[in-house]
Length: 262
Ligand SMILES: Nc1ncnc2c1ncn2[C@@H]1O[C@H](COP(=O)(O)OP(=O)(O)OP(=O)(O)O)[C@@H](O)[C@H]1O
Ligand SMILES: [Mg+2]
Image (cartoon, rainbow, N blue to C red):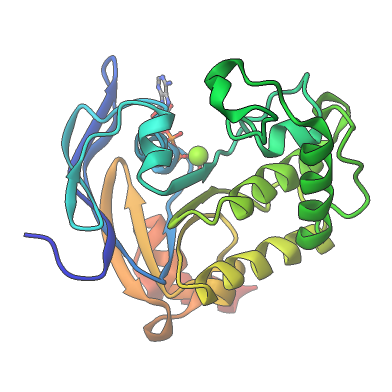
């Protein structure tokens, strides 16, 4: 059974790397138009979870449902075809291509579309579309679309990856620590982007270690510990200290004592 309005449902998914059980049994739901923050300490299994959803590596077991239907995700193409766009912690850009090529990788405008994979790229169109996108995003306004990605800083690369996700208006956008390495202005750009995505009726699964950001943009939190989902809360019904306690697996009263001591 899957409920109405669910964009993604994971049911007891598992993933091991040799004898490391990165995901033991993780279940979660993301609803339409919802921003869910996936939280947990280092090594909790967050990136492993989203890498399986985005097709980097498949789950070993458990079920995935996308918009109410059982789905099989074997690779990145399957994931994108289901309307899922992912920005990984280690951004997956092609460093030797220009910003413009990266923004449209695999979906470039072509001159003679009937030639299929042999159709020549329409570089003028590509450059124009990329420049328009960079202007719209605002977080990358100083960048020229012709510049090669390998000349950019980590934060600038992150901005390009986020612009890519925006361009294709995916149904579900997954962001794995998107504000890492970003400056103040770019960080606000990302948070604004998350709000825009939600306002447009799309869903976001956001992984972050910054709990302040969670309270700024998320509707719900899902907490992972040692490969399992251990708690779930509506953001409106909780507070910063309680969330920290859930992540650490301690009693909130203990943390409150620590906070007073400082
Ligand atoms: N490709 C891999 N091969 C072997 N072990 C892996 C691999 N990827 C992840 N792991 C292990 O799986 C566990 C979960 O890792 P994961 O990257 O999912 O954690 P995370 O919650 O994203 O942590 P962080 O907050 O540090 O990014 C860790 O013990 C990690 O060492
Ligand atoms: Mg991670």
